Length: 213
Ligand SMILES: [Zn+2]
Ligand SMILES: [Zn+2]
Image (cartoon, rainbow, N blue to C red; front, side, top):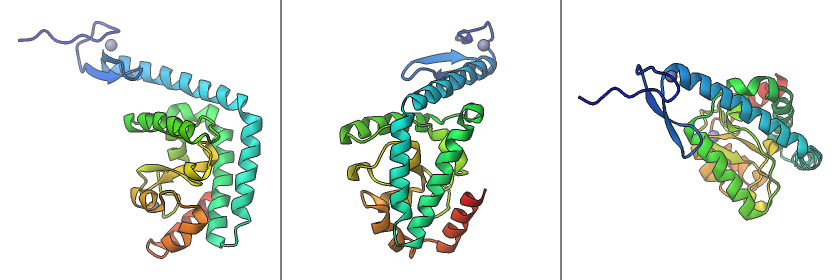
């Protein structure tokens, strides 16, 4: 029989599993050590993101106002409603991030997704302001910005291909179906048609709830 596997941080052999710590590095830890490790790592990550955001804040604020002003000037009331949601959520994102975001843990999939976004925005040469996917998901209750069902993807509301920023005010959770159907289309060119094939009243009720809270 193989010797029981020991935790890398304590003598325990109970419930030891392999975790991806600093991707791609993996370590064996017991539940207690894993919990301590990931809480501390998450706190550090949130602090680093807060500092990076502070460094980028002037450019970020300008870009944020610019894009949201544009959405709010669109003639379609549903497009304006989505712009208003982004404005409110971006404000909430920054107001509560430092104090609350460390309690929300990223899934392995979201960690991979965030690395992928940074690479893609560099390829498109668009504005990149670091943001936190798990915190975004929490703000939206993990629901799709466009139709209100459970979200799986993260969408750039103004696509990177059209110069959209990879930044907190231009990203939101989206269901796979909305994300794939939107593709590289501008919000105003896609949303009115999309609302004909989803539960539009549920989507509008969701926007009203997000902007009221
Ligand atoms: Zn341990
Ligand atoms: Zn959707």
